[in-house]
Length: 420
Image 1 (cartoon, rainbow, N blue to C red):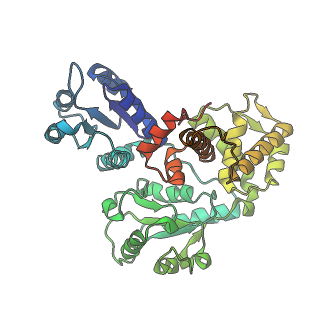
Image 2: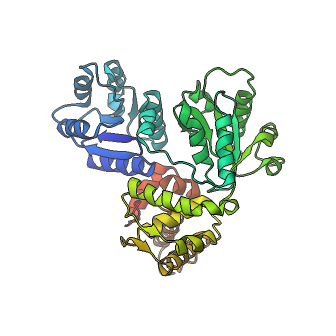
Image 3: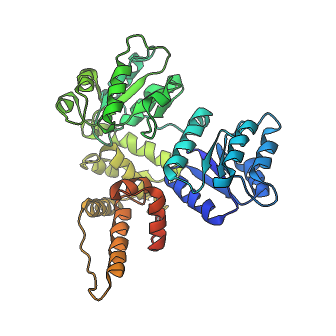
């Protein structure tokens, strides 16, 4: 479950642009055009954060903020949005309870950083995490049972833990499992410095150590090397590479690589296929509960077929398969023909996504501006497809700032949302 954000602004373009951007970042977003609508939504949906414009008809943002905070019991963080002429007013609003402000025209990097910081500082992430049903490691094989015991043995201290395992093997699930007794974990967001996240208020999970910038790696090594670090929380650092593979990696501080000698290996699914029937049952129930997909049954023949399927994408691919086949229909039984067809569709999509080239025909009668527009439309449409309409990934792929990118997509008539 994601944090819920309420955007209050009388300008429709800003409301729905922010809604699109924040939803692409994984947040749940409500919008309100005036104070009355904002009050109705706050009573019904209980947002974790409010983005509140200052100038609005009838009741302005500062007056609305004062009303909310006057009771002394309102702990929902509010970030003010202000134009150039109202920055002083926005700063003044912090005296009435606003936690921060962002200036219009909005910088997406600044906005997202402010949102993340506000949620973190005011405990909204912890509240969201408590509401979220945690994904559990599944299996009764000797390998999985031994790993559970290893995690149990690590309880009671705050020594750093290193995890290695293939993409999709469930490193994050095991990190979450290890963190449950101390109140959960936070996932390191590279918009922040590690120093911004200290002192730790939950286990801190770093998904891929090789992705850290050199200065972040140096700071992480310094923090991990502290012999008597205070507090009950720990660092959990992961990589898809093992110790031997990390040694000599040019992008990695080799002092960190040496720490990987004690890394816990998360086994690939191919080494515990006997857990597949239990995994199938678990994720059928998971998607029925989390996404309200219909409950469907894999019989013994289906389970045996899937035990012999090469899951190159590991547990992540198995989850993708379960989700896809549950969405095929609502009949209670899943037959072998449907399984084969779904696996074939996933294979085709994977092959298509793997393609990194495209051919495009451009009419030479077009002038340069028109030809460039044709190219940009096809180029961005292809990248949208390859990154499954994830705007953060799209911005990274094409090297554009997200604010500019949203405007470009709108001008070219491209949808940022995936069509259902």
